[in-house]
Image 1 (cartoon, rainbow, N blue to C red):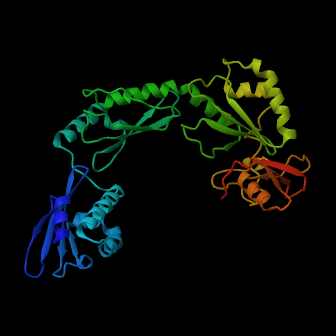
Image 2: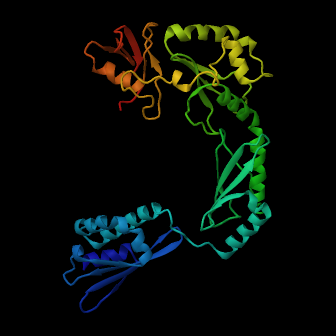
Image 3: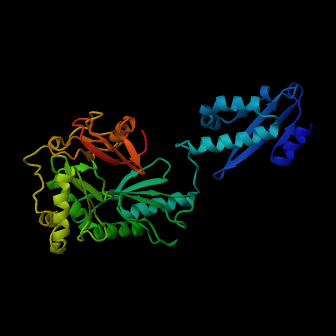
Length: 375
């Protein structure tokens, strides 16, 4: 009886009914994202919670389908009804968040306003609309013919509140919005943003067309880095400022010292030659005094050498970026593989974050900064 009283003090929306076979029936509801979910908990004559029965609508039963074993476990482990109600509410919230197809009807004015806005915008600009009219993908083409998508997530208060906008941009896309605005206003802002990034995408596209890019393997429009092959086990990673793509990017050379040190010297000595009026790629060629390997003559496999420890090129999305400094060896390794290898050698020693050991192939001295996490 005391537990029952506590249940009503903690959950006043629950109602107890009495009957012959079933001593207590708790009728209640949970509120989540503006929707009511009605549940009945039926306790047996002996008041044993572990023998209780839960009844709900078919829709809620579908949502809780994958959590039945957890509910049974909680019925057996909870000391009283109040504790179980708290557990039930938590399980329900988790289940609802993980249910992708939960559709909460919007007010009629939401749909009429949205359909009107789509008609004004033009259905030819719509790439996708979900069945609930809550997610919309709009397509656009910039002045260079590149195709772009913008995903809009609308809440029930549209157009009073703006939709969430997801775009593949290297910079933040923040829209200006007022309650009287519509989808066409967002779309026009999207077009303006596309043109503001034209110079950046032109520069990155030229690099992708004319050089062998080792990473990222399939660059997105938001990617600001490129790791470009220069020679055998020698590459440069550039970080381009999307707001100022004609400026000198940050450059990080990867490879053995005998291969990258001359490039570092040339870069430092020729920085004054950088010309913002010519392309990013041509500037890099002029400063480094090199021609990047041509895609028309060489294959990517000529530069994408496998790791000498795991014998794979890609490991958890990374490529070999450590190379033995001996010019007669030059074996590449993944940083994580080399770290594990050196850690396992009794002869290796570590000073702060630097590990000193030997190359697995030529036994020449080799050092590695231990900034990687163990796999």
